[in-house]
Length: 261
Image (cartoon, rainbow, N blue to C red; front, side, top):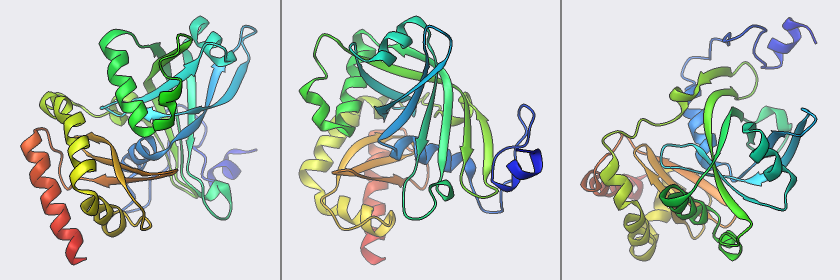
């Protein structure tokens, strides 16, 4: 495929760091972060002992800062490959009607790190909030949690919507948000127990999602992740929040807005 053809299909032109000029009004970085937060499973490419790429399907969640989190079994080939070679790539693709290539997809590459101690506990909490059924096996001795430290990311949002980013651009700067991180679990429990009507309003009125029984699966400075069965939605805050009281105020304002839309 020549360079002209690859550009016409929405792929980046040849050469490191070169990308398209994105269409006016299209926020590629926001789209990349949305795909990170909303995609429940992806194609994980590891390196096998011969040096060849090996692709497999894995469930995905995200850390507070947006880094992908994986739960893998010691019986899986990709887990053995991760232990020997930490370089990985992960494809997160949106699905829908029509041509699969017309939908957004994001490829992130970097190093996979096995998590232990407090880091493992935090990853477990976030992963099980996104994938509750994984609680059946998450604590088996041969299962482990991993974090993908993003070095590079490439977004293809469809025709002529391609962009590349460095890892530090994709991940959130969470400095100053430690209080929000500490309050996340209690905030999620409170919203899911006492504010299901508001969650439905957020999902339907503000996110364009169908009417379902929605719950919160994650909160971070930029937004709130919602889930209902195999569906996900992302509520983006009008401005970043760093303190629990700011979160409370933001959610009240969004609920009021949703009720009049």
